[in-house]
Image (cartoon, rainbow, N blue to C red; front, side):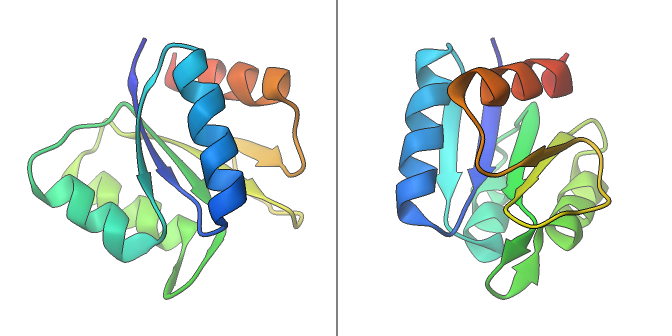
Length: 109
């Protein structure tokens, strides 16, 4: 179905989202922050979609997305947050499994 780089600093949320996306058929690599996400991409790995929290320690999701899209211009992005954000595509936390998979499916298409 596609490969996803999931960047989420809350371990409980990251674990749940990781599991839900794998159950939906996606290959998922998890990173706890921007540094781990950049490292995951530096070894030549290619992802179809970046799912990132807007607020991350050390960097924010939009800055991370911009940096990764410089390296991989076709990388699509889905932002998530518990706070309102003027970003697209955006998935407001908390979300259901159905909302997550629908948003990922739309973003990756």
